[in-house]
Image (cartoon, rainbow, N blue to C red):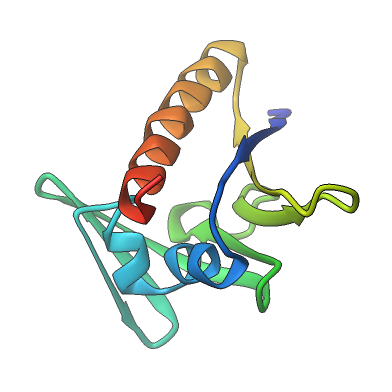
Length: 127
């Protein structure tokens, strides 16, 4: 099955270091992405309303990006990524979220979910 890769850009008015901490640490992710996040043996476990899902970090570069893959998707070209973009002229910061969907409806649902999650992130940061 062919996956649809999509990216969404969100302006974030904060510092790179504050944003990066919220995207890469269990405590930071617990503030907005999941109810709780634990890490053990390089596997992050995300907890939501009685369910849990494990992810691994595929790649990361300090203060630039982190790419996760759900353990259930291992071996597939499927991941989700948080990329911090600094605009050259204005120095404004944007968070670019990249994810995959199996069809257009799943893509639309995914965008709505990311919109809600990024609103939670902005609230956690205080913006």
